[in-house]
Amino acid sequence: MAGNQNSGGANGGPQYSPMNVSATGGAGQSGQAKPNYRGFKYGENKKLAEQAGGARMATAPTPPPAPQVPAGQAPQGGNDMSSLQGLLSGITPINAEGTDTSVPVSHGVDFGRGAGSEVLPNSLNSDRRQIENVDLIKRYMPDLINASRVQGAPDSYKRFVNFLKSQVI
Amino acid sequence: MQWMENTFFDHLDKFSNSLGYENFGVAFCLSTVGWKSTEERDTFIRSITGADPKGGE
Image 1: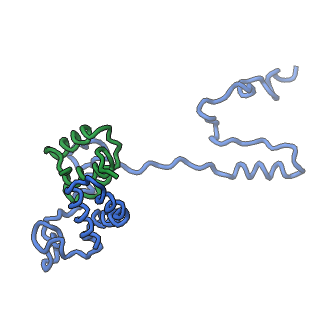
Image 2: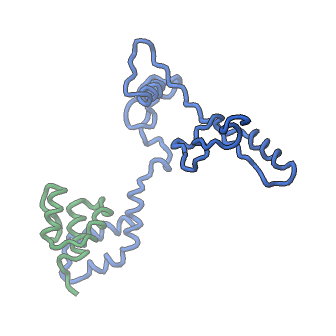
């Protein structure tokens, strides 16, 4: 008898079972599938196999390095908190002394040294709510005036309409 | 045509005089609310101003 009956050819091992599927998506020996191309023209099978073998799978991205915690200081609340503390440590408080001593850092704010918000340009200082109210008055003024002429309209309402007229004019 | 209570203009009179003329925008919006009654509206005014409703006189 020449050789073992298991030598050569398929031996019926688990790799031949169609039900043998890796739950993790296939952790093969090489980590990359090597398709066995057959049936193409002469020479193309080998070329395709070489192309498949030469292509490298994308490697998993490496996680960013963890921020360094000073010796003797325990991390507080994990990486997010320590990075936030590092970020906040570089902020200059609004009442801190500035490098430009000619203009206080609170210039343009309604507290502290320097001028108040009156020095700000109108684009930053306008009362948008007031503008919206005036638009509203203009739109409904005819109806509001007509209602003030209705019999039994209270004087308080008429005074209010007069006030609105003064706002529009 | 007669002035009627529990209408938009009646609400506007009460809200504008209770909240102040300068808050016309808020008074206008609150006047568009479908108040079930003038009592419900006046209760609301009392709750946000802490005083009895003004207007109507």
